[in-house]
Image 1 (cartoon, rainbow, N blue to C red):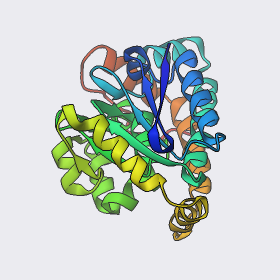
Image 2: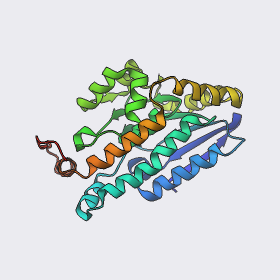
Image 3: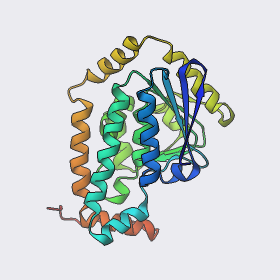
Length: 265
């Protein structure tokens, strides 16, 4: 199964992605399972908080480069990116406005839309070996997954800009220093500590949890939903360009990309 759920004391649900789902989160079968699981928990009155974690080397590796290559070859890459973000972005919005407390237990490397999933959580617990990457610029894409709204709120606009423009890869320690994660713990303590936070934050009333989350997110000039729509439109447009094709091919060929100097129409 791509996703398993363990119900714990205190209204906590532990959602674990399989190694395959962690590596290829946005494959239709894997993401559908994750989407269904999280939506069911958000509708469950007995659930107060959700811990999300991965298995193996990855928390969530983001989009599959082979799927991107196939989409470019088949000529339907724009439709594929549109379909993916049509599912991911509303999920992130529901997580941010839900009264459920979401804790990401980052067990390994996380990139792209998978990083957006972690950033959309209310709390992030991470292991030292984890690597956090955006991966978008390396592929000739603009960011999605709410990254341009969520990350600056945690680390500041300029740090977020350097992360993206320099295609930086942060260690768990560096992410902790910059404020992208909340706690750094030993691998053996990851789930226990994440569940502890979920139980502690989930004990408060529905009104307190929902109201505080929504009020904090509304205290900006741009609402999250608006930013998600903007990200999607730019992501779909950039996925149809020659630069994205070059980014995918260079990634598969393990070489530096050579992007065009002229802006795409």
